Length: 67
Image (cartoon, rainbow, N blue to C red; front, side, top):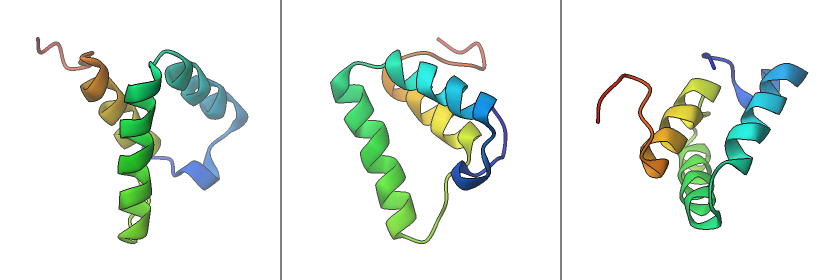
């Protein structure tokens, strides 16, 4: 994913985000959802890349090769 904001995401990016979302158990989805909501409440709009990184963090997956 990239620095695209949610409101500017293409259909393909939404499909990719949907697949990511479907890969998370309910508890992890709630963590991601709450973090995004908190950011938006603070006036920050997380990018798709930031949402993906957060999902990777809460699921234990890492994109940078770290354990």
